[in-house]
Length: 69
Image (cartoon, rainbow, N blue to C red; front, side, top):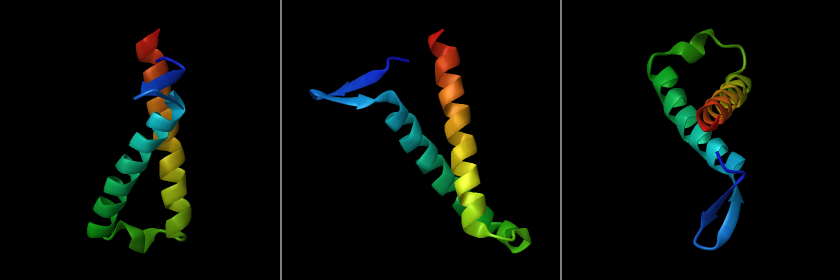
């Protein structure tokens, strides 16, 4: 993956694109967890959401680095 993305003349770090995709996936997964009542078993919902975001961001970034090599 290139280090920067060119979006109509504006250079954006590639990590921003990965973080945006991770945010969308975390939002969808959070909705799924809410519908299945999984949050009833969780001590701190916001902490779980942040941890999911960090894990998904790391996984997507590692996957994108693996694809570019």
